Amino acid sequence: MDGPRVPVLLLPLGAIEPHGPHAPLGTDPLISRGMCERAAERLAADEDVHVLVLPEVPYGVTRFASGFAGGVHIGEETLHSLLVDIGASLIGQRLRRILLVNNHFEPAHLVTLRRAVETLNFAYDGRVALLDLVRRRHAQRLTEEFRSGECHAGRYETSLVLADRPELVDQALMRTLPHVPVSLTAARSASVEGGGGGMDGLAAAPEDGGFRAMGMPEAYCGKPAEATAEEGTETFSTLTDLLVEAIRELAGE
Image: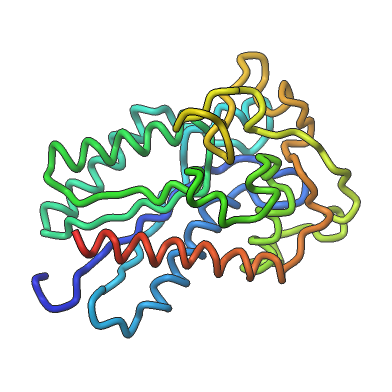
């Protein structure tokens, strides 16, 4: 694998969990795969980078969804071990550059992804990275709803699904859903990076019921009724820009 084009492997990630009464359980991995496929297509003829898209890992840490039908939670150690085993197998085949592409933003899930990256890089000499969309520098390039934190199955995520798999959205029901003004960033004042802002301040899961305890009785927040395929297409373009930039950065290491 030492040819002129540097191989970069993309691993789409997410969680299987409720996304309101209107959007699919697999919204998060669907968005991650959509990003990866678009980035691979954009770079298909690139002279420097050879992008390969791995089968997604659809399951993640999803305690927020407890009490709702359809959520499939796996523990932090299970997810960490799975990602480390996948990464170590690829690194052992001299495929050292692996980029995790995630669209599930529960804090414990994110912490686990970041820890898996550290393990692979320090214990296995990998060149592994996470495209961490909640970081301020990335979030500021995404939509207002994403930045506000009102983006679980709201306008932001629903628009992305409409752009990729519109048949999976109950659009008639979607248009009847009221605005749920719950920000997933608001329950914690200190951000991961320090000082708040954007999705960095994503809340820790309430112990008494996750989404319901946050004020999301139908497992969504934001304004899904305003979602459009056009917005989703535009957002996918921005997400693909971010991913291509991360791919090129990783390839240059």
